[in-house]
Structures are given as structure tokens and as C-alpha cells.
Image 1: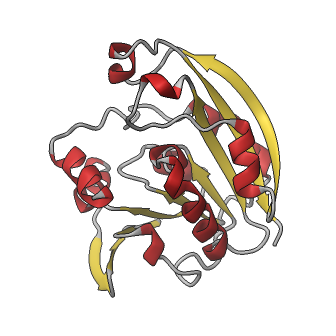
Image 2: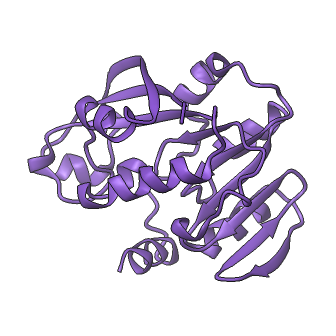
Image 3: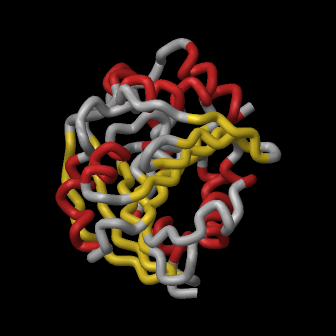
Length: 219
């Protein structure tokens, strides 16, 4: 059901979650991670995010995954970049010049697929998941990311009673609960925003709070 929901959103071009500019928190705080410019980084539920292009411009090699092949193909086509499509078990690899993007279930990713990755940027993955799925997502993320990897996480906070669709509200105490047993968690910034999805406004949510975290996998 989850896969069908997101694939259908892409097919119908209902992609209000896709940002047409680089994420402001990425460009502001990525430097805080202190990474070598040539190191591989991971973007879960990546879609055709322009943030991957920004990360490429910093010299990084990109790893990503999404359920919708149409989104991955659009990433390369809109960037005028050739790519190869290769079957890999239950996943499909889309290989570009500086990126390998997987199409398929996030939970089918293995540590081998993310070998060498030193950091992840999560703007749209955790907040896309309903509460009952977040624990499994974080557990698998920490299983496949190498030890010492960092995560730049962006969450959204608002009155969840008003909206029942993603992006969901994820509060600081939940972030701590999800990550603290295996990671250090640092809040970099928390700030109000009125840049909320159109369907939020229809339900009375005109503003929210974005929170940015630096998370380091310690075990």
C-alpha cells in the first residue's frame, strides 16, 4: 500500500513535497558535518531532489533510493545526464556519472549498497512515515550505514490532529527515542516556517516549525 501511494503520487504529478530550490538547511548546515568533499553520501526516499545536485556540486558521490522509478529517471533526464539501468535482485540500479540511485524498497538495501557512505541527508524520509513505521525505518538505516556515519535530519512540527497525511509531525522527544540508543543527537536549529504544503492550509495549518539535527551513529 505504501509503495502504491507514493508511485501513484508521482504518476499523477502530485509532488508538492518536491522542492524546486536547494534545501536551505542543507546548504546552511552540511558544512557542520566536516566531510571530505569526495566522500559518498546517501539520500533516502530521494525522488528527483535537487539537493542531490547540490551535494554533487560539493564533490560528493551520491547514493539514493526511491520507490518510484519515474522519479529517478526524471532526475537524470532533467539534469541532461545519461544513465544505465541495471537489475539487482529486487532492486534496480540507476547509475549516472556521480550517482547510484536504487529503485525499490528501502528495507531491501544492504550495508554493501552503502559501503563507504559517510553521511545521509534526510529531509523527506522520516517525515513521510506514519508513527508505526518510523522505528523500523531508523533501525534499518542504522543497520546499513557504516559506523561513524552522520545524518543531517530535517523534521516538521505542527498540530498533527489537523492533518492526517504526510509530511507528518515528528517532535524532538520522538527523535531522541528513535536514535539515542545508538547515536548522539544534536539540535542545530529550530525555526518557524510558513512554507507548508497547500493541503495543510486547507486544514488550518498555516505555519509549522522545522527542526534540524546532526546525528552521529556511534554503534
